Image 1: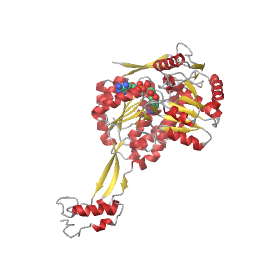
Image 2: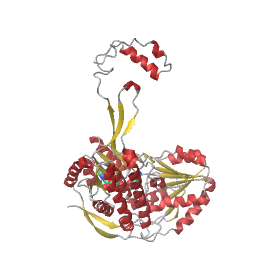
Image 3: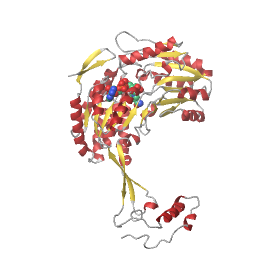
Image 4: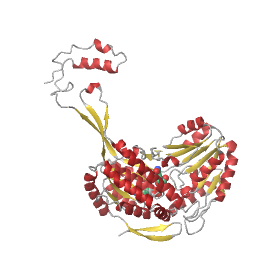
Length: 510
Ligand code: NAD
């Protein structure tokens, strides 16, 4: 039996162990989920939503304890667990409680005159069993939102939390088991890559994956073998573009939070800052002064918590080494706080360029590299010079310019004079372009991604034959050509010219 160890990265203390789900466990869970799906999808939406309401209220009741556990699991500051994991989750749940009925409602759509006599509608039918595979950085929000979205849409869900944040996986398991859901509708499969691999292999009807681009590629390749649809929410290298006319203090504060919240381990973190040359020096000066004042420490009393995994810390160190070897200067920070826990000093870097990993690859740590630019054109070019396209921010008091630049950045999400916060609005779809992913969730898209929009066309069924059926009439080609002119042509009246005499025999319906 393999076990997952639970470690608190901010204290370097072991918290416990969990049993990993093996291939047989995954297969059995899949069989139970398939069985459960048949009745869950038939349950009226209002009833399914009652479970979700109970879940939301339970999360709010237990919020302080949940935040504490998420913080123990990840090393993040408790306030951040409450603010960035729990708050957006309950806000999205509430949004779907209000909107799901209208999003999933069968929609009547027009039927063109060429199909006269029929009616058309779109039904949103659940897909079956959805696999949700999630990462460790916001282990609550990035799990509960897709799980619940899939369930609201009528699917059963098998959920695999990250092996790096197993305690949060266990917390989610406990929360859901308190709802007394029908057996098999939701199941947590604890484990690492192997368990994730078995889950994909078990042939779910849809995969919703959040994690790195490297794993996303593997999952998509495995899913392709079975033609399983995938949503991929992947990494980022998000640019922040600061023009000289921006409110500099606001931009500096935004840069600090955007780069250092959650110890920089945010897919939408500010990973590159470009500042217009005329204000570059004063921006850098302010950033350094404010960074020096940030408190790094324990989850209940700090601005910046610890990082979550030693592997991620090594990536941060390797990016810093590569940058300094190529001429970058560290203005503050740059090293671990101690040899035991995973605390890393918030780090500000200048003299950077795009030959360095720190400006190209996802760093995912508390590092803020700043680079000057001299024209709008150059800012757009630098911002777009990345394989990623998750989020971006543009800072200027000139709204027209900010909007213009924002529109030219190839990114799934963009903020103007603000940072990262789009994901907190459940009305907005969320997802990445380029290597940052495929698909969108949140907003109406967040339910529609878990259904098959199914076209239904109905006829009263009282006519024995339709005009387009056999046998074809000798005048049918001419009649159809006339109709094309009348309905869709440049000169509709031309249609009347070639119109054959439409005899009773032409319309014969027996
Ligand atoms: P990861 O890709 O290493 O792992 C993510 C999940 O996939 C884990 O649960 C892991 O066990 C599982 N997994 C790994 N290999 C697998 C396989 N072959 N088959 C099935 N499952 C497998 O990512 P991570 O380190 O946990 O998370 C950090 C990454 O996630 C960063 O790149 C970050 O930018 C990205 N991320 C993206 C978003 C977003 O919304 N776009 C949000 C948060 C994090």
